[in-house]
Length: 123
Image 1 (cartoon, rainbow, N blue to C red):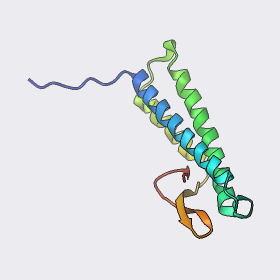
Image 2 (cartoon, rainbow, N blue to C red; image 1 turned 90 degrees about the vertical axis):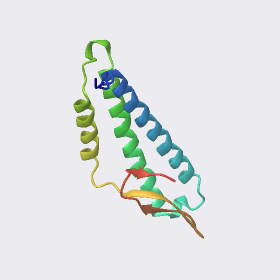
Image 3 (tube, one colour; image 1 turned 30 degrees about the horizontal axis):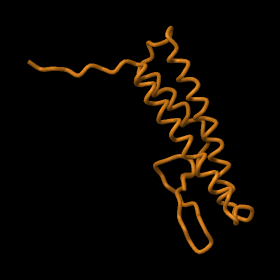
Image 4 (tube, rainbow, N blue to C red; image 1 turned 135 degrees about the vertical axis):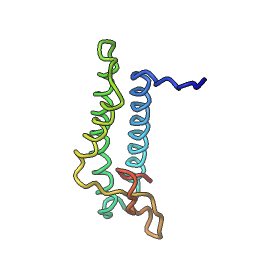
């Protein structure tokens, strides 16, 4: 007899996505704090751009978290994975060609480099 795995309840799927988004927001905020504290921040356009883009991504993700939390309300627990994917796609399409950056150290301090698999600037 074959056993099939039960699908997790929508609330747990949404809760997991909220946790992922909140963790991502914390990492982006931490990266911003680091970049803002760099002595060369005022002269480094890459760092300034990175902080600006992170702030935009943070705002969009915070909005998405709020939308997902609304889905967790008892009268709206019927949310499917499709709804989460639609919200994720909405977040992705609302960013206008974001730069993908990661941390790179050189003699002048941290530098942003393109990283194609993530949004925002992480150091």
